Length: 322
Image 1 (cartoon, rainbow, N blue to C red):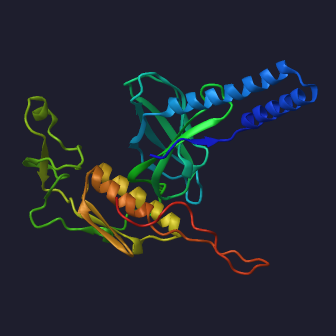
Image 2: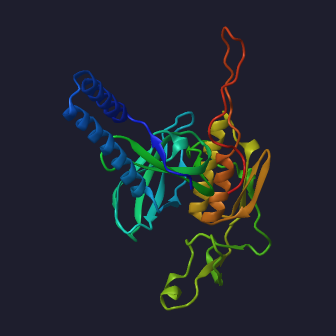
Image 3: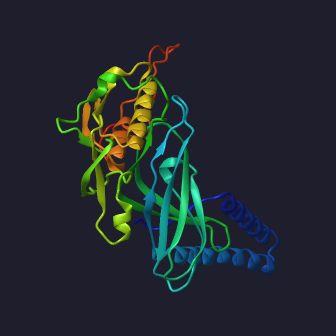
């Protein structure tokens, strides 16, 4: 956490201009009342500074939750996600007019009007207009214009390493290639057969589609029903089997992943530089979509009077794992 910093605003310049004008009038007319008015404005500014620092003292801020989101149509930046920030302080008096924002993402902000002592305040920040990618969260800032609004004071808080992803927008493209389906084994057991063959322990992150909820309601551990006799092959999605632009291919893969998860299949993913082994469940779906979100972007080349040049890198980082 850094020290309180002063952010000069338009009202700061207005107060300064008015105070200087009164001082000039006092000096030219040698009027004691005018001097008194000027000194009163200066004292008011100093008191406001002290109260503003006290308003932000003992404050703590952290990211309580963040959401991953699907992007807009390929080439469009209309995705949005939410970041929930929690505030609390150690003061014995309330804090007023706290504005929370993310300095790295422009003017995105949220307001906590009053934060009572030993209470928790929360604010949801909505990020929009972000293209597909993986975005880091490094710090957040809490500011306030309390008490008089003559200036803004702020504190910045360093955050533990965390990231959020904008997944490719799911787009229905070509049907799932039949060559992607691999046999599940000689026993033919799985989740989507016709004959019930028993239950097994539920694994963390696995889909709840076939959980035996009746047994759970009776106080038994969470178990997953198993079926046999059906063709429940493992589906391997391969980059080489998609067509079109890079963003379109990623969107088609995202659509296939969601459909396979909805149907309860076990599925894997093969990209030019990464591979995910077959599995299912929300954690597995997130892992595969994360790879799609971090897939390198195509940087368009521009030609003009200056010849060939490439745009500066985006804020987001590509690649990596959750």
